[in-house]
Structure formats: C-alpha cells, structure tokens
Image (cartoon, rainbow, N blue to C red; front, side, top):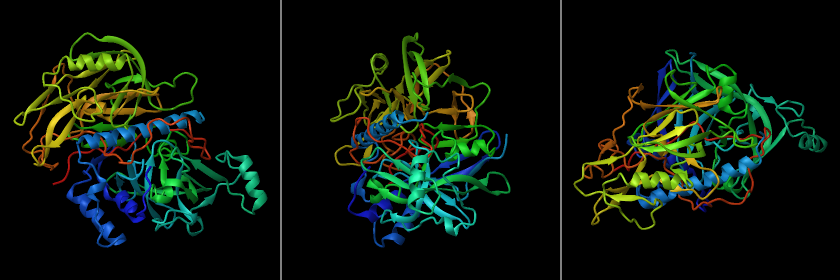
Length: 547
C-alpha cells in the first residue's frame, strides 16, 4: 500500500490502467474474456476521459510513477508486490476460520492496475435498486465485499456512495442472522443504539488499514451470457462501509473492495451456490503473448491432467496447495524432490526453496546456450544476454511431477529483460529464469509458470487441473518434449503490443510502492464471516509498452 499527498492522482492511477474484457459466449467453458492491454489506445482513451473529468488538464498516467515495462526496475516492482502478497497470505492464515448459462457483471468486466496500492485488479460493479456503480478493488486475501456507504470517514476521492435506504432491494442483516458471527459486538451495538444491524470490521495487513460498518443484503447486477443478454439480480451480502482507515483514506480501494475468497458469502461462491453457474470452479488461460482468458463455472475437460488440492498440516488454510514429487527438464529423467507449493495466479513469479530451487535452476542453466549476463540489481540468479540480431531463444521446458503422477508442464520458465542501448528505444537485451529463491515458508508457483496453460481451479472436487491450451482458438495444444523456440526480435520491440512478435513480459503490472518483505504475523482479515481466501480469478496480463 502507498501513501500519497496528491489524492486526486491516486484516483487517476486507480482508473488509468483499466483493461477492457470483450465477453464471448462459450456454452461449454463459461465466460470468455479477451483482455486489452492497459497501454492500448482503447484503454488510454477511456482513462484520459475520466482523468479529465476529475482533474482537468491532468495526465492519465504520470510517467515518473511507472517503471519501464520489462526493465529491471519493473521486475523489482513485481517482486515487491509478490512479497507483500505473501505477507498478507501469512497474516490471513494465522487468523483463518477455517452446462448452464454463465454470468458477468452488468457493465462487463474491467480490471485495472494501480501503482499506489497493493491491489492489482479492479472491476466495475452495480449494486442495489436503482443500481449504483462502483470501481472496486478485487482482493484475493479476504472474503467480504464492501463499498463506501453512509460515510463517517471515507477517502476524499470517493464520489459515489451506497445508501441502503435508497435501495428498494436492501435488507438489514440482523444480529440473530446466521451470517452474523459477532454476537458480542452486536450486543454492545444494540445496547448503545436502536439499531439491530450486524456490525463488521475488517483489518488488513497494511498498517492501521481497515473498514468497518454494518452488513446489508442487496443485489449485485449480472448479465447472462447468451444471445438475449438477460439481466439477473444476484443476492449478496455486503458491508456498508462507514469508516475507512489507513491506506483506504489515501485512495486505495476508494470505491470499495470485493473479497474473492472461498467463504460461502464471497461473490464467487454465491454464483455457484445459487446455481447461476453449473460448477464451483473456474479456469484461467494464459497465452505466451500476455493475453489471457478467464472462465467462471469451467470444470475443465475429461482428459485434462490433475492433482489433488490439500490443506497443509492442521491448518485451516484454503489456498490452492498441491504436492510436487519430482522435477525434470526437457526429456530428462525426473529428479525426485518432494515439496508443497501454492498455485497462485496473483503472484508474478515462482518462488522455490532448497533443495527444489537449486535442483531446478542448475539443471536449466546447464541446458541454456546463451551467454550468462550480470544485470545490476537483478532479482534472478540466472540471467542471459542476447545479441542485437538474435531472432530466437531456445529454452528447455520444465516439468513438475505432482502427487498422483500427473505432470505439470512449464512451457515458458523465463522472463525477458528490456533496456535501452546507446540511448535508443527499449528492446530485449536478455532474459532470466523466472524463479526466485524463496526466503519464507511457503513455496509458490506464480503466473509466469502458468503461461501457455489453461489451469482449472475445481473447488467442488478439490482438484487442480491443467492442459496446454491455445487461448485464442479455445483448443488444447498437443504436448511436445522439444525445447521451446521463442521468436525474438529487437527490431519490433520498441513498444507496440500490436506488432511485437513476442511479448516483453508475461506477468501482471504491479504497484511501485516499496512494500515490506515478510513482516511478523500482524493483522489480517477479521470480517463478519471470519473469512480466509486464496489466490483466485482475475489477472492482468501485461504485453508491452505503448509507443
């Protein structure tokens, strides 16, 4: 999370990176989203229009706030985000309680990336009757959905608030409601007022950051993805956020926050339990050019590889944990090594501890023919340079054998590094193995290891499924034991995502704020539902800098 003395810029930056998702109907696999990159002309026009409305004459994205995409500073920012993410995960774990039509938000789905806080993704949602629109942060580290409401202390940038009194579909969540799990606070509240509404309070890992108010039942406006585009009102429980503290007062999640966790009251769970989607599952497909697709209600195909999800030890964590039993590179014999790992699309990179880290990186390094590079301040131990005229790089494929014998392939285990040569435009100057040596107690498979796959998070059957997939054609790709030959061109890498043959990165853009590495077990979510969550759902895939 970040603090800014220019609050209006927080608002602009929270809106600046909206990624438009064109919804495509697919009866077999759910909602299909095409993502437009945050630097595309469509996104720029959208953001500048809103920036001008809020602060005439201001820039849609202050250049000094953003690192050059693909640069070493860029990768450092992503790593800082990852470590802040791990901190939030650890804090939450310590306090954890334990073929139908598909739907999207009534206004479609949009996600954005803000440089000023720890939330990577946003969506525009409508709540109540008549409906009120909010740009809410999507938080994979909590369950409660709350919006600014009857404000006693809200961010200065808030220009829309929710009023239960003005919504004909709102209902009070009373203290005797099964969803209200704070009887002591309820009793105290009833003693000091005439209200019987269930109070809530959520504390987040960022220092002194939280939201409090009362719980309300109302409707979230969705659209059935069929030829008729029918509107549906899905009942949800949300927090009427009357008091915000800490970073929320500086523009982080100024329009509210939607928790995407596993608790039964989280919005994703509601879609399944209410029968709106056929399966309590979702899939994410990551293309090698940085374009992705997300499908709700997709349980995958009968022939997909899969492995059980598990809860480690006696923990009540519900993150996506799997067991790895061996590592192989290309068609080499699997090397036995057992470790547990969280599959986390919200993490930019992959983090492994020894012996798995050394086993994987040294094996990969022995098979790379490009010369090693020593980039100042590099995050990654193994990096390589490319020549100005080089057109391809050949990278071995990693294979992780999981519990049960299914093999998790990693077609794209590298991240490219961009830089300027002799003052010219940024171009690919090398690449690194996208694995960072872990310094905390949870190993993580990040989004870079999921590129080229469709990954299915099947919560109803407690399995993780996957298959190599062409996200554009929505078809499975045949497996291969050959190394990946990646097209590489420095001539067209000056910044246009439309003509670059290979994306400069496969990972989400991240906030720049120097966030803590792994703080001591501090605050975490303590909502009315005692919720814990996992990394899920929406991801923002970066392609390249706009010219």
